[in-house]
Length: 247
Ligand SMILES: C[S@@+](CC[C@H](N)C(=O)[O-])C[C@H]1O[C@@H](n2cnc3c(N)ncnc32)[C@H](O)[C@@H]1O
Image (cartoon, rainbow, N blue to C red; front, side, top):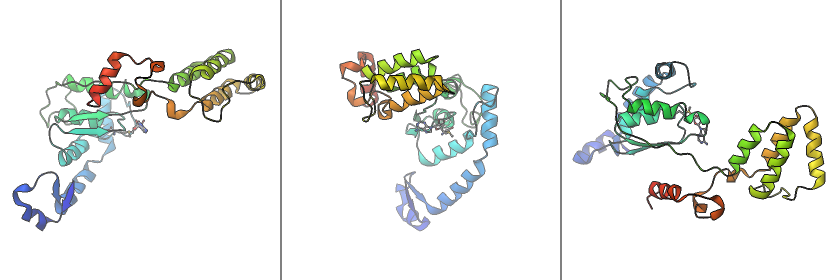
């Protein structure tokens, strides 16, 4: 978006569109946005949707409506790489924009994905009445393919030292370890690991130690590795990725 002084906009005449805004307009827009930034309203909307305060400090729909209105046209793609409770995606959907949302936490399934299903079903909270929202449309939800993250899940779920030792063996065989980790699992290291498990908070300390061995840059399968047989990516998954990246 390019910003011009008002007199320059005047000279632009018919070319004026949302890519060219005046500084006066921007000042007015900022005033409007500041007035809409009431978190309590966002919390009320979430309570209405889920019957409880399912998310801390959600944005309210009116705020996102204004931002999307100022910066996009119908059909444009709105990217929210911190999806949270999904206000941006819900508003983009109701306003006829396409959208991509990214979220790291498990609550993506119970909060934003459920919220978008309600939007499609025609929920009437937030900006729905203002934009005459009647429901419709669709979205797809995908998870990144886990690699080291699958070992992280197993470590977190482990119940005892024995199980952790087996996970360590599996990691030595089939995970990406940090470059400084010896994949051979020397006897001495195993003895130290077992001794750690017998001390105070032993299981937690063992879990932290194992998690520390894993290379966190390899938590998920990289797109560039999609054809590597060891990751066992199905043809269907490959096709979905190609469609997404427009290949
Ligand atoms: C306050 S919320 C954002 C609200 C959201 N933009 C909306 O429209 O309602 C921030 C979210 O970003 C997520 N997050 C933070 N760092 C992230 C990352 N590196 N990758 C993915 N999600 C992330 C957090 O888990 C949290 O749910």
